[in-house]
Image 1: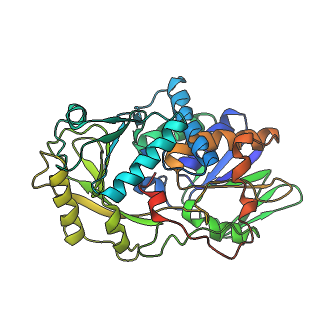
Image 2: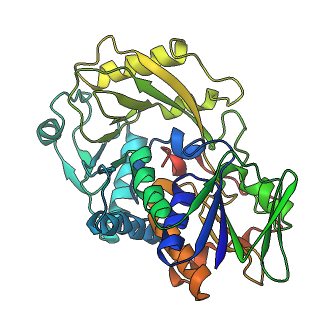
Length: 388
């Protein structure tokens, strides 16, 4: 089979790898550069909690297992996954009630989470500064963070070794299903394939609409919406942190070399992709102030960069994965949880493309539930904390 993959983020690299391993002839079209989209501006939190309804939770649990399976397979690449766990707490009664309900739901689903005290939390993170009113802390031991570039190195490296070809820069200007396959159009050029896979993140709505099968996304450019968020990248700091912290005022995780990534979800209301804030402006100073309150050793911390991340968010907040057309020529994947789900969605999509057999794991996530919808269901920001 000759298959086109459009977009080279984590999803595109994973699909290309799985297809190439299955013997397909794969051509990847990337407009600017690998990691140029959402993959390159992600908090990269590896998890399956606060993922509802249940099928979405289960899909993310399977996504976590797929990373473990990939780690066990032979392959030379730096480790991309750090399973340091995640610590979360609440600082007021409303937050405590929400956190208690969320952990109870996860315990019922056999998802690893338990309550620990202040002393045990400091054993895990010696430099942690815990507010006086916080008694119990939720600990998710199997969660962690990824280094997206290292995951991409593994996925795309193996795709390339197995024959996948990259065309970059290459802007796809048109896409259509034909009687015998899929046609990919570039400026002054048309190329025929047996099928095409769209892994273009926040550009999914535009490209699927051009193909005649519009999959609606929440506006990825809307200032202050659930689709945008600020991510601060610090200069190296002498703080001991090897896991994720998700707290009411600040989320933080290591980024290698003593650097941290920080995120204050309430500040996202002022995030505007058209007007990114300065790394030494008021938003940056506020993030650094909160970091100093959270971790000893970060006094005087400065941001090397402050970026506006843009999340690809299908209109109902759930993953999209499946054929757009009845003849199985065009396949689209779009998800907010691409970091956690990337390797799994890549494998399942490749199996569906190569065998024609539908995956039961993707049955609840077909694009047909959204194609043709003109309304955008209201998305609750709390459901999408963190860029994953």
